[in-house]
Length: 198
Image (cartoon, rainbow, N blue to C red; front, top):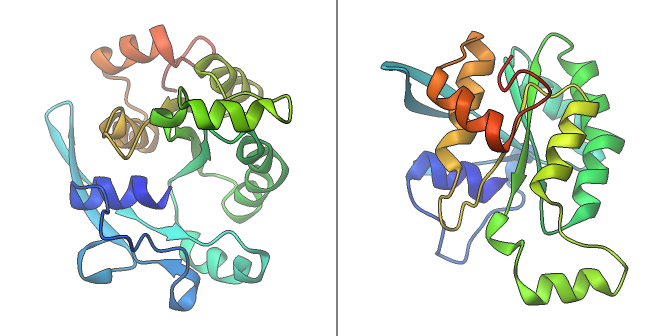
């Protein structure tokens, strides 16, 4: 998730070997000049929107800080790695409950990350050892349907595949828009029930 935010905010995958996992205050500095909240402008349907992106740390001891940073959040991007099924279980076990408590009126988008790793032979082999497999797009859609997500999207920060779609969906969820071009695209591949974006 951190690489996804950093790549989108800075328009490049972090390659300096310093992908942050914990910074002072329990919040990852995702933007240029190590800003905590990163304002990023994105155009959706010929209108520019500025998103304030914040990446928080998941450990229990940082819950109070997450409460502060998520106050007023319109849309959560709840991320899991398609290459690690345990991360999807963690979404169900921890994150959905927490965001519903912290921001009950906010919606969320389920985001499958690291799609470039789905076909990786080492990942597949490691998962086979425990009778698991990478999470498929269909599994992601099914989970999103069953758990009240506004939409389901997938991306790879490494190759930027689907990256802009994540943030377009974020804007649409926050503004209740349904641009036809995006709606049709997600109906085909990533729809959540009858409404691709609702």
